[in-house]
Length: 132
Image 1 (spheres, rainbow, N blue to C red):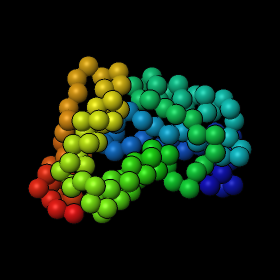
Image 2 (image 1 turned 90 degrees about the horizontal axis):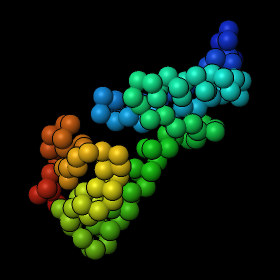
Image 3 (image 1 turned 90 degrees about the vertical axis):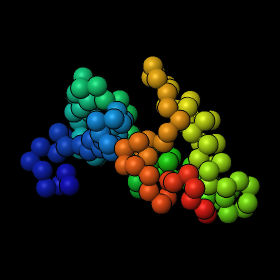
Image 4 (image 1 turned 30 degrees about the vertical axis):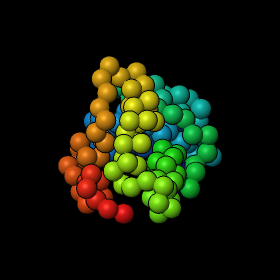
């Protein structure tokens, strides 16, 4: 992408996460020609509008936060497939365990309801009565 830009030193990726009005994370990654000042300015901009920018030192094959989420999902599916727990208990394990710790980081209120369910309503994949 930078090869086609007139000012490649000012080109970067700022990737917010959905829903962006709720999720403050923004991954910021520059290219090989991106100036350090451009990265610094983008990080300041996102912070100024209430986002939580993180600077990726290089472009990964997929976005970092999505990769972390996918790793947790794979492990939950594996545990269900192995008969360790069912879907409802896996939801509780995430919601009432690490989900609370993750969701309460600098938040004044917590909810055990998954963000996906709160934003989109129940679907076949996140219904409490769904079976694996």
